[in-house]
Length: 518
Image (cartoon, rainbow, N blue to C red; front, side, top):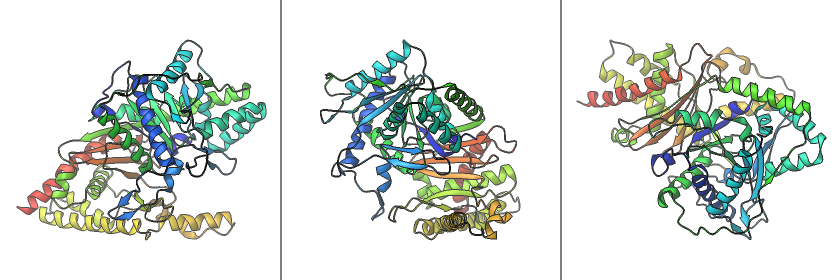
């Protein structure tokens, strides 16, 4: 099974909500400005000037930000590794080149010239050069499609590719060590602040020949001037990319979507194309990878809509936690559609700890199930439903707090399983128990969810299992924005229906608080 779709996250940029609505002829000009702000963010991290994130007054671990740039996953026959080439200014010199991909061809150019980050007009000059070369010549091999492959097959193909010509390894290392990838995409996904579905689908499951699936950040420039990203999840969690994209969004608003600096373009070396030596085996492997990827991508159903009747402000006025509000609405939606509780993974950050990443918070509690049943029981009164709902809120909030403070158990159980396998010890019976699997253990959660934050930045993932859902969401003062995924080939799931049911539940839950207070 192709792995890139299953492990990467992707999402739309929110710039269309203000100065950059979809418009043909703006792709490279806008893309150059956004790329420049991305480079400024890299420079902040490199100079160690990025403000430390905090939860209330507690500082959060910032180590993941080192993996945002100059980072790539390398496939191995039995185990992958992450190569990180980023170093801070005080530590020494860091690679400063970008990779740009267009029509299956791969180019590189320096983002720093004479110790100065190149300006948006200079970036535009380089990207225009690349686009012109690609439009006037044949399409490339689409070598990057190999990064979508099953990991062992990609590792073996990569070894063969390196054996064909020493410069192939040099080209791969150039890609691996680059700041990030700029993808010049021919697609024209439409979108609006209320419906991001097409853009998110293109970001998550778009053209595999112009993105390097193993890179920590692929910046996607669509032909109609809208943008997205596709990222390997291994080096960092989504909140790192959210912080970058929010920084870009704020700066684009501040400059009103226009470059107001100098239009002067210095003498720059032309971008260099990375041309790989290949044989028929590599060509066949690329074609197979593309075919497999497109088969799986075409099976993806994605609904990314905004609920605009109310948002965080009104929910907080009712003294309810907005994240828990969404999670319980999702539990109720799943119960309504499937007639049973839905085992659920929600991301809990453990960044209050040194090098902390995440813990699994399990929203499918007995309290949540009891409330769902009461909502479907005609004999249940509004007062009873409200009482059960508030108990479910309290339990969810308690568990989330425990997980964030290192008192969860899923990562601990994963560690014990890995130790048993690595040391060739007997695997404890718990891991083969049907109840463990039904509860979501072993990567079997029917609902794979995460709060992306309280900014305009959004993203999506595919479901964890075939008959499951991916469910990412962001929360604003006046709206909730949801990205729900499912597989079309599953007879059980329907992303559109789940999304609509969640939105209906939002209104019903708020009504419950109003009615019960009368």
